[in-house]
Image 1 (cartoon, rainbow, N blue to C red):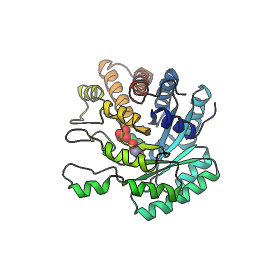
Image 2 (tube, helix red, strand yellow):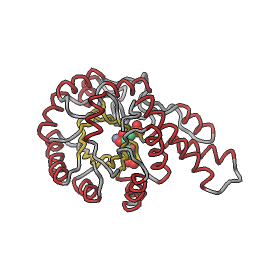
Image 3 (tube, helix red, strand yellow):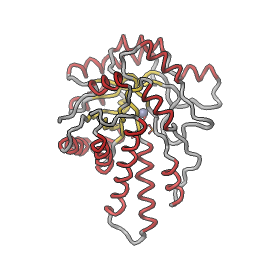
Image 4 (cartoon, rainbow, N blue to C red):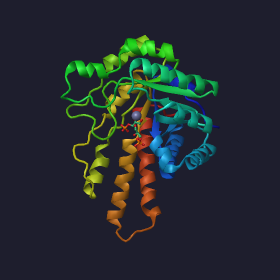
Length: 309
Ligand code: G3H
Ligand code: 13P
Ligand code: ZN
């Protein structure tokens, strides 16, 4: 099956109340680890690359590796640009064969975000590519920010409806309390499901995207720290909360940090346990296997997308 857009997978996710995992890819082992898991679970999957990932892996290599993964599977796979910063970056990915792009105009004013998103949507749709946009501010919702500032950072449901109507974006990333990276909450982990419900009420047919949704798996953090790492106090979104999101109208759940932790934990462990090893395959094989294990777990038990291919 060739690369697909997210249209059909999102339709099914909204109808049957499950989420599609969108996993960040940076190298061959990560791509293989994710796709092996999706294959085992017969689940649709989104492989997403940030500009940093494209720069690291190099455009041509990344495309060819994804092409190779797609050739050896029968599950629906979408290739998505994560956090596209401007029109040119989105255009480059669209022209190269990505089936989905994100234009992240969340740092701009509401009007500027609309104008930029609209421009990308017009170009993308002319090439049958779909567009994810973002409204609200993900980072910096800290405990010491006062309540009105916090509310300003969350996505406003009325604005979401106006934004989707004006831009015609295909999916919308919202801010309901998550943030990127390994330190998401100082106190208790909480998401604003009340805001999600209002957004779903206003735009029931628009697939909703949750960024910053790694659970920051404690076992992986412990392994990193045990074998020489220094990641104290890391905290993510608990699986029960992500499962609730999957069943409450979130169609795409973004995961990068957990993959980074999985790879780092296994490499640290393998090198510490076998100091004589210097064949990269000796530590990259367990790293790849760990990625498969955690992606499979998420697909099966948290996103509930097994057998939805
Ligand atoms: O949301 C950001 C992703 O984790 C990608 O991070 O830009 O360092 O590749 P990156
Ligand atoms: P995490 O840092 O929680 O993995 O989020 C990744 C993400 O949102 C990529 O766009
Ligand atoms: Zn993100």
